[in-house]
Image (cartoon, rainbow, N blue to C red):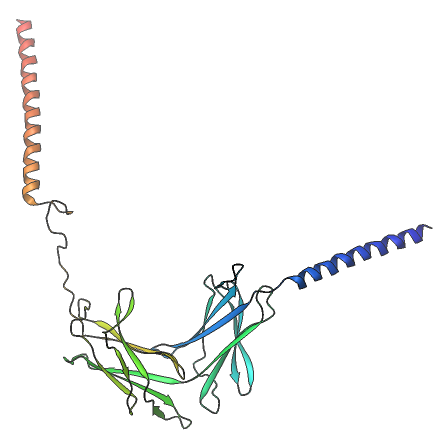
Length: 298
């Protein structure tokens, strides 16, 4: 009897545990993952380093897309006909993650490289995939710092199968100048297309503010090109107007840190007269008290 009772208790406990487990699985399955999107951008800097930025967005409770925070993104590169995992990183508070690509990316028969970004098996975000495919482009920026005309020539080339540089025609380049809060367009008509040689020339304004040595940073940039992505080249030059530093930046004035000399002198004389008057009164009082003592003693 005792053995049957124990067996029944164990069976009951297992049944309850099983029910709880099935309930948890059912609740897990009933949870819908958030609708998710990934946007990829490619950027090549002056020093030839290459970066890919993944922007993850999810549909929130208000049915609007918001930044997908802490989403694990797997990055792959195409090697031959297979995907090879490059790295896995989580998005930041803005839903973005930036990775640095290898210097020599594997190329296909069209001299293009491919990068894939995937969200896979995430508890919160639905599975989603996005990829980019670009050709390797080189952007050179030639200028003469001593050129009084301030003419800069940018050249765009791509690497052929034989390793030679091939000029790229009809690519839009935009010319910029480094300012305090970032890169600003060099002028109103700062967009120029490359010619048959892959070159685009631009005349920079002659009134660009520079530093104390007249140095200013100028740049040529190919932005969001369908075949090459975003490629930039920056270089410093002596085309800026020299910044003159005032040795005494604050003039002597009433509402400046340094007061006018006349005001300082007049206030000093006034205080001196006041204190001299006090000393004179104290001296008279001392003399009066001294005279009283002498009279009392006599």
